[in-house]
Amino acid sequence: MIYRLKATIDGNKIFMREYEVKGSSSLYSLHLFLQGDLGFAPDQMVIFRGLSKSDKVMSEYGLFDMGDGTMDRVSLESAFKSGAHALVYVYNTFKDRGIRLELLGTEDALSRRSYPRLVAEKGRNPDQFSDEYDDFESILPHHEINEGYEEDELPEGQE
Image 1: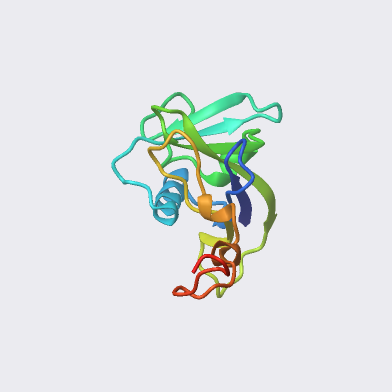
Image 2: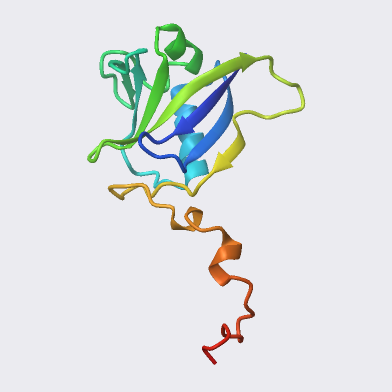
């Protein structure tokens, strides 16, 4: 079974990713995929938190057993079947920065596709060590930045 996940950052309307991941994949293999896709440093501690419908932490999965199991022994499917409504991939444990992974639905795997895979994206990758998510390129469309002028040409009256 394939799980379709929507990744967002709480309080941010710019960043969004959609992923398709095998339900049998471990949270550790999902972590490795997210780490590569988002360009995060491989030497940082990360955890997954299972959230209830009211967004209360109901489970935590780390590289070491925190009471709910380790990332390499817990599958994506079992994390959601244990009652989690969403997962948070905490990529900066010191600043408690994370990406929310909501389950959009499940579907059958297609034989010619490899999983996990990125399906859709919007916004830049977050900076792993920053306090906030910034994507200044998303504020102004590229065509508004140059306003149609050639690089050598100045607007009328500014020559």
